[in-house]
Each structure stands twice: as C-alpha cells, then as structure tokens.
Length: 102
Image 1: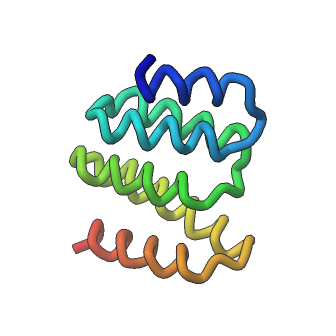
Image 2: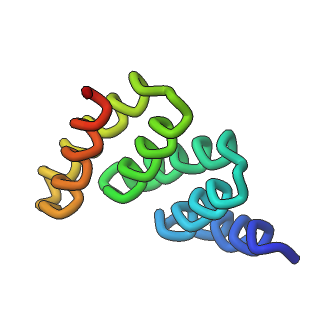
C-alpha cells in the first residue's frame, strides 16, 4: 500500500486537521497539485484555524503562478495566525505576501 493510500485511509477516519494536512503535503510531494489543493481546502473545512495549511497552500499556488489566489490564501492565513497568536507563521506568511507583491 502506498503512503498516499495509507494517509487517505487514516484521514478518512479522522475529524482532525493533521492527517488531512499530511495527506495534502504527500500529494504535493508526489506532484499531484490538484489533489493537494483539494485536500488543503478539506483541512480548512475541518479546522479553519489550522494555520500551516494556509501557508503551504498559498506557497503551492504561488509556485503554480496563481499569484492572485496565493495572495488571497495567505491573507486569510495571516488573519487566522493573528487570531490564534501564531507570530512565527504570521512572519512567514508576511514574507510570502511580500514576495507575491514584488
């Protein structure tokens, strides 16, 4: 069984964001960007306050040249990071946003 199959099975039984986030990252690593983006959105649905998913999704969108979508995603992520008090993630996302604007 592949790692993606294992993670899919685990995520399907979970109501927590971490297994879904791991699955999104595995799709990304495998070059399956469509499923990665779909799965990042699933993470948002499960827990809209799970900050890492915003950054990684925005980063992937930026790599795909989808700057406007990346900007929207990172701005949403920055708002959530402020709300949960995650200064480190806020700083990383601010840097990503700056790179999108340049």
